[in-house]
Image 1 (tube, one colour):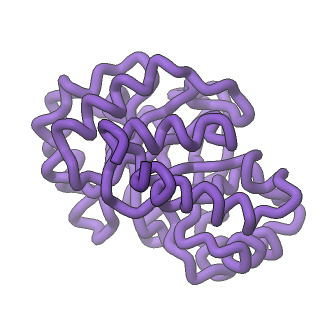
Image 2: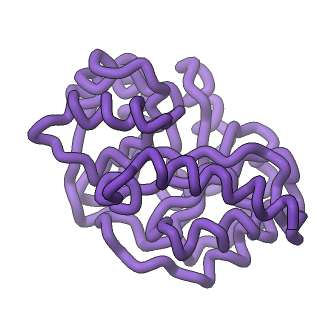
Length: 228
């Protein structure tokens, strides 16, 4: 097994921000047919990040159109104001940014997400040091490293984040580590070697001529790396 690599299974989460919203129901069925086990939903408020995307109403529509778990990523200045709305809309996992919450409120924030019945995730911008937040990791279901600056799809992967992934995996060998941003055929083997287990893929999945083959390849990279 490569240094830092987790023995946990690899999961590709198609990022619905890259889907064709003019035929969203069909896109959700295409994800399921390709073998996706979870879907990633980016929520942007136009304040925490410059872009503005979807709200609970669209998540509710997604929930009606698929049985796959919805992993909802709140890129919002005040995520706690909306966690119950997104949970009621159908979110199975809710990931909040540590930068939006701050250290004083973090324990309470994790508890409030947990109280909704959703899985709890903590997200980190590329320049945030995760080690400052390690004390909270035992109380969450996943951590997610932004490998681009959040707010827009299609950005280039930031390689400096790899060290944060490695440091987290070394301390938390069983914790699901998610990566989001610039995850494609070039970067998938790198982040898996670092210890990532959950791969959020937007254009790499939806624009691939054979999304199911891409998904099988990416999820198989963990087994290939482990055998080296």
